[in-house]
Length: 447
Image (cartoon, rainbow, N blue to C red):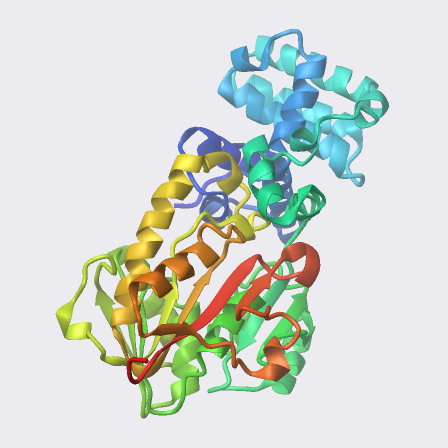
């Protein structure tokens, strides 16, 4: 259903309220609200900037509020707290918006969502934030406040990569991800798609790593874009594309994609193996499978069989069945904080522990499904070694026929694969999402 909200700040406030208090996801809630709000293209861009910017910098914004509000932050009502965060983000981070506009809009929203008294409180806090902006910006806050990331996550990353790298990594996570697309080679090629996008007002150039990848500029809204409707491309990070390249699926292969939704890697594999091959795409959630079906139709792919199945449950009929298996395992998502900033506030050490147990069960079942001589690619969108290298080591200890195969295509992987055969991508180094990729092979005989 459409609504009549025409104010991008109000849309942003509603989205962030749902994320904060209804445990919603930033990206999905943004998509839902933008589909029903009556916003212009410019206002869509502003609402998106406000949502992601506010969520990414939440701890810093709360520190600013605490420094200028006489009311403790825990006693500020939910709607007013969200309004203050959005207004201060706009005031401190968006130079094109005058400070007085941030104050005025914040006061209006405070009155609308609470009361005249609340509007007065918002006015006082925002004017104080404006007066003290230079002083506050010069304040040396602790790293976890400046970077708006829980301190335990900085310690976790520092343990594996060192403090300086951890700080640089989380600093980069406050930025914006490049919008990359994978060319649907069944319908077009890089050069043709580049030209078509240009006629639609989108500039694109070849990516550095993946061969069928374009990085775009101006692709703010795919609604009504003919090239997208015609299935000429799929929006996907370069790291995700490389996980399929590592699989080296060949014409005629039977491939299992264990955790397939929303279908980006499934459709990529399907392009690789042609009509003589077959992809079995599985996921445990029915609504996610609908996403795969939708993408298959749009891209014109018909060599995929969809199955609703729980990868945690071993299936004897799968044993040794597949030439290739892709396991894009559920993970903490620490590699995609630029896209899903709410992740960092929802994670906990216990949640990561629970995720690792799931990953260990999945990787054993994935490997058991592999035929002798076949490849398993294990990939995640996290940079946490507990979910990556340690899970692979668990497989190697529990399956004698498993070994890491580091012989990946040199033109793509020579500069990003380490001596152990692990591919690790970092946003602060490679510009991609944070990704982990490893290829394992099942020995044809015991040694």
